[in-house]
Image (cartoon, rainbow, N blue to C red; front, side, top):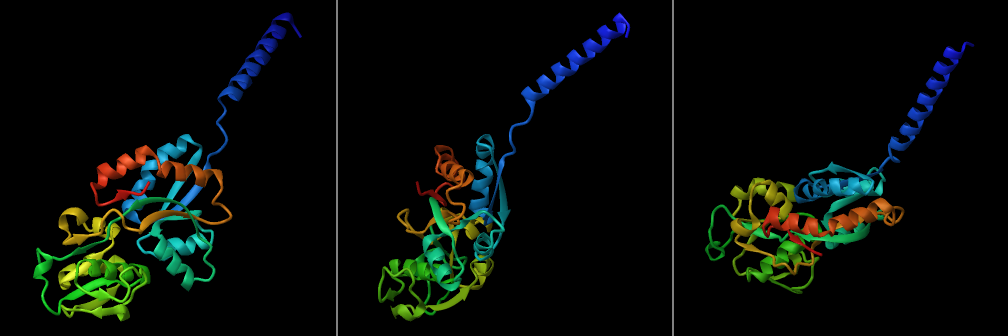
Length: 271
């Protein structure tokens, strides 16, 4: 090999070594931990989308799977098709466990309260509600009991036990206005609002229907509601680094500010 060719070969080796060294320094970091969380659209998915960039900095690739019902997010968590869910409160979880024997969901942290409220397109004041009025309430046990408790607090009916969150229509002992109840799937309640005299609607569905629980309702739960919405996981992943990072993010000052500014009292931080 000539001296000139030797110098070129040595230079090529040096450049290759330098390139390899540089590549080693800028090689991408280890792939982020993927975390798939099931949620209903508003406010749950919106809050999760807000924390995505926060988690990305922590090495977590948060993916939000959106559902419009209250069953599939829990079912898919149990079936390990998602890593957890964010949509339910403790009374709903307890009731769901009674009816689904394979339920293994566990609470990770409280995030917010969506004050439950009563709406009417026919009446501006609760006092105007007529005798024999038709009242639509959710048909799942935890939320139907919640609706009856709220109606009880407004003096519209009397229950055997005013503190029983599992109350049913059989527990009504006084109904002075002779209210007639229609139990419907929670997601459909905003759509039937103009067909009934009064509807008690979960705030996530109210917000989706452009109803402001603070301004548009005839009455609303106070901030002491026991129905805080929860981040849920399973025993096998509740202590994972990714789930713990999500819990911290959901209870952060940034999320508290986001909730307060975006929902203006329709959603209340529970931390």
